[in-house]
Image 1 (tube, rainbow, N blue to C red):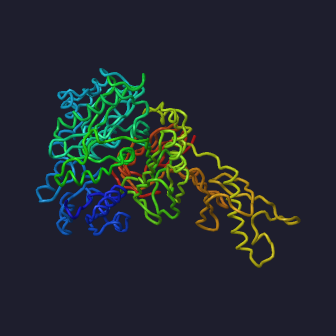
Image 2: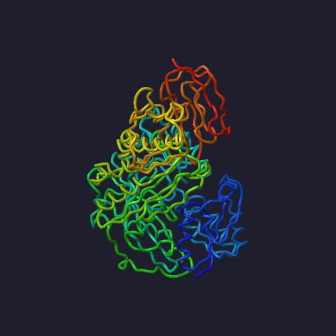
Image 3: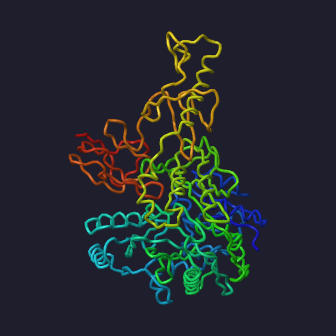
Length: 627
């Protein structure tokens, strides 16, 4: 076994790998950008090396800098984590050429599965069922539009080098195809350096089923059962579980056998995931499951597989990379209970899931469950990388038990001022269809208005806000007579103070009671602001109305950048008439495209943004005049 490992990644996956390395007595090396100098993964490692500026293309995506860091620190092996360079065959070759151990599959396997169109052709030849679609080399918009019409709408456009939900668009009709294709190509080029796409038929009730496979250099390949990743938003996984609900023994045997066959077809070594799309309109059936792609790396959702098998997949990666045989044979790998994982992101569901950045001043995650976190209290969520905060993972004897425990855990998330999707996760886990196992990739989209909407604060939240403001008043008035200037809440000229006070929840005035003791966790950033946490939500009370958020300044028609980023599309010109919800421009930030839309009907009277230009958070991009 090697004695030291460098992790060519950051955040929670770097910390996760370091944890196994420490347990096995392996020294750890972190690499970091200038933006991550004080990051948690840097603090966790035995050594840390600066490899460049904040932009990933100048640091985490530069193979030469990472290999130089390994040489400088004496690291014997490199683990790529996931994302960044994890599925880059050229990087894998460079690592091995430098005399280092590559903790991943052979470059030939990465190349074989790296392009979705070529991978599907290869799988079809190997006898693995593949999804119907278009895998041709002709990438002209005219040919792609014609093939989409042949396949039939709705159709899915996917980047051939894609992954993680990026470079993917669902198109419902021919009129929307050209714009969706252009957007998909831009995002694919920005994320993967390859704008080519393929087309797939889109199923009305699809299930996303994937199988964890493992191979070694001695010719052995096994599976570690399946995961269900169907609960998605915009093709990005939100909640994953293992095993898949409704999976009978016959279907499991068919799917896992196909996954093993796929891995064997490319002489696979290490950890990999074979992803399938299933037509679940009549339940899961072995003849209605098709190969989509293979991810030649460790997956974000690997913890649920670890929880049901009791195995450490990173340890397996280390052992296989060191030349050892797989620790267990297929018949020795057993499955127990049910595991569910939720991805906690720094994003605001109430404003279209725009990423949220800033310092984690208030930061509390649930206790008593597995938490793979990339940050700690006081750390900063920056605009340069993926906005994942942590993964919350629960294992139970039954699926129902695991779901209930995870919903309770998500409800215990208390974070501010960075906004999170914790409350959204709670509502997803409490959705009756999800609980019943009637899940498909469209569940969130069908229920988005309910799932993304911020609920009204409970009476307990209001009472806690009142208590917190009472504390502020009593501190200010200590030792002084009651007057309007020191006892602001509830003061009356000719009567005792009222037991309620008027404060503002956003821009809305609310009356809160003023009890003597609190009933909820509270965070008070200042004397004029109180944050009360409940069910994963953060309710902010102020003694004056707040300016409306979401990229639009209150009342003046200014569309502002919600975060730093690059303008990748301008859809309007000065003088254009626009309607409520019409896309105005597209901002690329945190590895995703974000469309900024008109907040009302009106006219464009100023454009302050330039196509391809970089903008700062809060800068005015477009100004509108309302009708």
